[in-house]
Amino acid sequence: MRIRWTPAAAADLERISDYLKANYPHYLRPTMRKLYDGVQSLQKYPYRGRRGQEEGTNELLFPPLPYIVVYRVTHQAVEILRAYHGAQRR
Image (tube, rainbow, N blue to C red; front, side, top):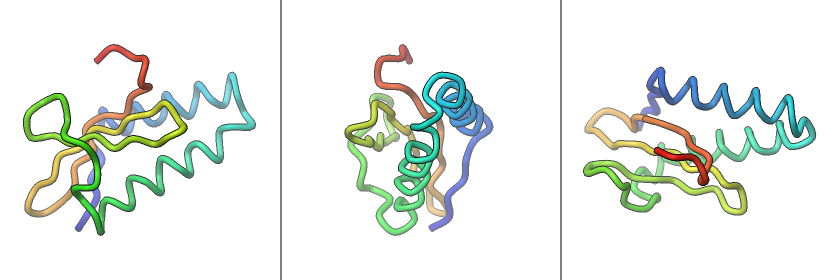
């Protein structure tokens, strides 16, 4: 199954990267790698996340990291909708 990032999700990921780069540069690479690998795993296991807060969505968690990726599974792709810090308001 194909992974498709929405512009909003790509912007979220860039904000996470920018924040880590500015505040915790030693966590940048491992955190971004864990997020990327988790999202890529949805190609084989698209329903591995929990049911999302909005109907028709799922959420992928990254323990012990505080990030949540919201996605939707369609017939053709897994659409990554947003990427949040767990303490962030949605």
